[in-house]
Every structure is written in structure tokens, then in C-alpha cells.
Image (tube, rainbow, N blue to C red):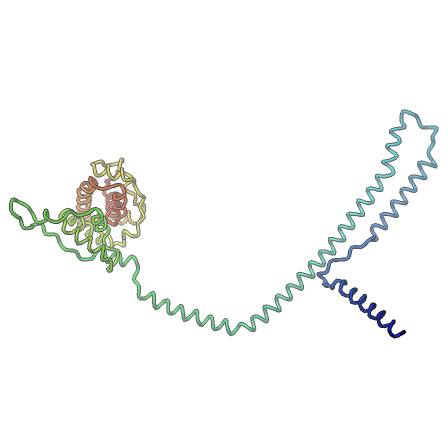
Amino acid sequence: MAETSQQPQETEDASVQGAGAATRPTSLGIYDRPKPETISSIEIVALVLSAIWLLGAVFFFLLLRDDSAAGDSAESLRFLMTMLAIFMPVAMIWVAATAAKASRVMREESQRLQAAIDAIRQAYLSQQQGHHLRTEPSVTRKLDEIAAAARKTETALATFHSRREEGARSVVAPTQQPVDDQPTLALGTQASDLAPQLSNEDFIRALNFPETAEDEIGFAALRRALRDRSTSQLVQAAQDVLTLMSQDGIYMDDLRPDRARPEIWRHFAQGARGRPIAPLGGIRDRSSLALTNARMKQDPIFRDAAHHFLRRFDKTFAEFEKNATDSEISALADTRTARAFMLLGRCAGTFD
């Protein structure tokens, strides 16, 4: 019977101990929240000083005060001064105690934070050292793969040509020479008059010249443009000046002119010259302007070719403007031929 009564008691003690262990928080070391102190030494000192001051004030005002010297008129002022003399020092004592306690808490928190930072730094360094030892073979393998990829890239790049070279080849591509002496048909009709009229789209595409050697649409438009007498003369003149300027390293693909409004182009087609059409000279590249100016002054062949090109562009664009929309004029202004006109026109003083 006694053994039976002891077993429940032992079971109850074990359950109480287990519950206590379960509710007891696990210590986190330096990361554990500091336990707040109920009363610290600072509060004790403040309490002692406050008690001493209050006892001294009571002793002075109650036992040593002379009531005969007091008057009715100064009673209220005396009461106020008494309260200030009693409680003001006590308040100052507790303000100082609060500041001292806050300073101590800040120092403790700073020490804990510094310890935590040091521990994190040590753990990071240990992890980095171990990771470096584990990943060194993989890093070497990655570097080898990158080097192999770089060699493949260099080999692939060697098979391509630059954009400038393609533009130069497309500019100097051989074209059919227009024949002025075409056979005359009955009643004075020439063979060029029987050819289908060139569309504005083909006209614009032909003046921009084919982009690459594989630009079938561009070459088809160029062939159709060469069947038109006026357009073929402009294309030939443009090809001549583009070829001559490419000898000085001037390529139309490198120029980024300022765009002019379509109505200014229309004013030019209708005969306006000088300042009203100055926005057409939108080429701002100083090196290209300097080289072209010098070439026009020193090379008579280049100068004659440039003036011939400007005359052909003037005449052909005047005919094109009559049936062209604003969007088509803007598209024409972005062609290589139009950029050559802007550059040579500035050098020749067309926009002055």
C-alpha cells in the first residue's frame, strides 16, 4: 500500500520537473535578452538621497521655522517656495538617476552588439575558408570553360564583317550604266516612256541603296529605279559621290542628321533657297564637314561630281515632291542619298 502511494507521488514530481523544464527558456548566450533588474544600485542611491533631502526639509520647515515672522501677505509665496525647495531637488536626483541607468543600459547593449558582430565575422570567415577549399576545383573548371567560350567567340567574330564595310560595298556595287541614246519609237516615243512608272516606295529604297549583298528587295528596287531615266541619273550621281567620300572615310551610316519637317523639304522642292531651308543642312559632324570642305576646295573632280549630284537631286526631288506624302518625304530624308545631299549642300552653301 505504501509502495502504491509512493508511485503516484514520484510520477507527480517527475511531471512537475518536466513541466518546469519545458517552461524554462533556453539560454541564447550573448544573444539572450538581458534580465531586467527590479531595483539597481542607481535607484537605491536615488532613494537614499531623496529620503535624506526630504527629512532635512521636514526638519527645517517644521521644527526650525519661525511663525512669528510670517505675514499674511507673504503666506502664498512662502508656500510655493517651500514646495519648490522640497520637491525640486528630489526631481533632479531622479532625472540624474534615470540618465545614469540609460547610460549603463546603452553600454551593455553596445558590448553585446560588438560581441555578436565579432561572432558573426568569425563564423563568416570560417565558412568562406571552408567554401574556398571545397570549390577551388570547380572554379578552375569554370575558368577553363570561360576561356574555351572566349576562343569560340573570337573564331565566330572573325567570320563577320563590319557594318561600315557592308555599307561601303553596297555603295560601290556595280550598277547598270543608263544609256542616254535609247532607240526612238514611232512618233518620237522613247522606250523609257513605255516602262511602268516607278513607285515612291521603290524610289526611296533605291536612293538608300541595298543594305547588304543579300538584300534582294533592295536590289530589285534598284533595278526598277535604273529603268527610269531621271532616277537612274540621280542614282549614278549619288553612287559617284558616295564612292569618293568613302575614300576619306566618310560613310553615310555614321552620320546622324537633325530631322527637318516635311514642309521645309516641300519649300526646297518649290524653289526656296538660303535661310528658309537651313534646317535641311542637319549634318553636325565636324570631321565629315571639314574633310568634305577640304576635298571640294582641293579636288576639282570631287567638286564637279558634288555639284552634278546636287543638281540632279534638286531636279528629281522637285518631281518626287508633287506626288509624295509627308511620311514618304520623311522616309526619303533618312536615306543615304539624302544624307549626302545634306552634307554636300552645307559645304556648297545651299543652305546659307
